[in-house]
Length: 173
Image (cartoon, rainbow, N blue to C red):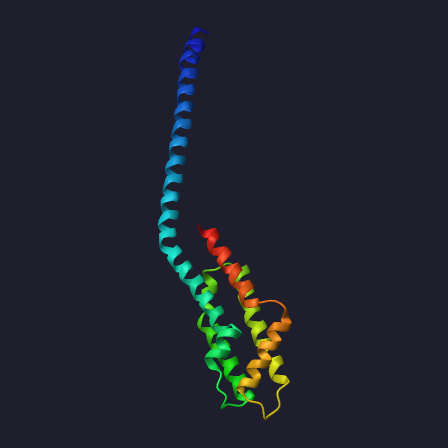
């Protein structure tokens, strides 16, 4: 019986020391892991953040370029027919959108959905405004009809979407 008692006197403190060492090592390794993970996130952020900001800039530029206020002034030519102007506007919107399609990888799904909806709103404005045009109307007449359509819409889809984009950029910082 003395052997068992003596053995337990040695075993219990040794087990407690081993358990304490286990806890210290586990805590140390967890902190090391957390620090490495933080370093990886910081390096990743240094690489990805500029790309994401560039994507937001390009989306903002897309929205500004297809905004009826800017696009109609930039592209209007009184010498072309309303139909040809409609085709030019739709082509311009499609090209701008396709040129920036890859930006959806770097921005949130919610913002990209808003961008697509805004593009669709502008396409709808062009198409519905052009349906009212007869063959004798020119690009200026269509531009006026599109402006009227956007005024009657009673909201600014481009401005609203730009606000959402800006808000998401603010959340990055």
